[in-house]
Image (cartoon, rainbow, N blue to C red; front, top):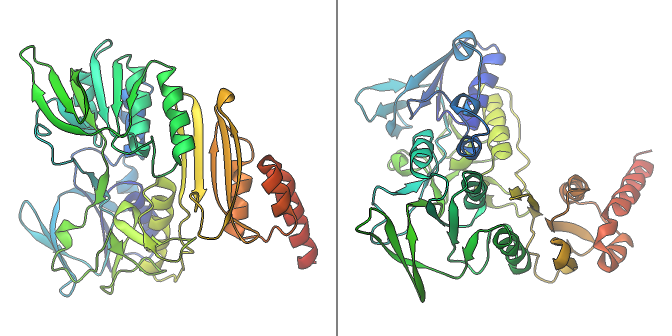
Length: 419
């Protein structure tokens, strides 16, 4: 049996290791599209902040780790998949066959169609090569513009501040981290950043980037004064890497569509990580949850099924935890609420604290938390167990901070029912 895993991020590495530990005796090939050892993109901001060296981004550190597990790591880029014939074709020429295939090709940064976005001093922050360029081009005191204040952008923001640059953030949405925070939370994060010397523009579009005579860049903004930059870091979103699957027989949408066993529409072909549109635990639909815990679990479950151990995946929960210059923000589940549902809200702007709970009937379905780190795991547990809160819902509507008491009461009720 020949197992091929395309993509050497967390999903691909964990899948290959899981297959190895299953002891099936087949050949395992892990295909990486980069020259680097398999690494975590989520570690790159720590590299920029000089908290770690490049080796700290590597997913595995022991010499000969992959060889010792019988995993053949190949540096190739896949150009096409023929699922009917069970073969891959490489961009550099040549091909290889497979019996079971896992697609773990992740995502690629997307840049807006703005004049000047192809200039040398406009960079993404996605690969180790990108990180090297930012380290070389973002010195203390430099003027740096970060385009995009989503989840990834805010992680990069913290790393750039650690490099002691003069940072300006430009975001088209009406708030920071718009896909994990409502207007109240996003505005509170922006105020926190500005109090720490970061200039933040929301509801602002960049209409063009051009070079100055002094070697710097000018960003022309829609309705606002131009901004100078020695370097521009673009973090305006990513898209799943599915282009090479055209004509492959593998169904794609926002990502590669998979079933509860992480198998695609093509028998014997699986998908995991940021390329996979798996089941959403809350909605039952398909979505890409581009976070490392989901990628890791995708990889493990896909490998078990590839290796002949049927394992159903319950679906991933939308969850994000972000540290923005010391301010912790968290969102779980259907954080923006449901039609006909109720919201319990507590806001303390002076202390940068915000808690919002979303309910469907008496079941907690979503949460936003800002400046609060206690009991967020309890919130997640209530959402994932879909525990009926009964009278505790009214108590939480009066004071959402009583979440631990509600959790303990629900746990005791569940224990009594089990007995």
